[in-house]
Length: 60
Image: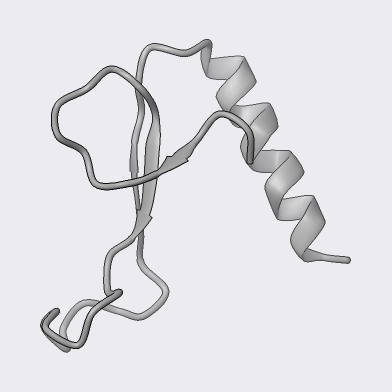
């Protein structure tokens, strides 16, 4: 991933991605595989392409 920043959103304009249940303090109702994405002002086609590339790399 080149465009997505692994972080919690604080109201910025960049695209962020984070795994929600990272800490033991998170409620058990939050699934381990939940990912939160905050879409910023980057070109949407670039964001999709970046995600597709990341998913393809998981298949290797």
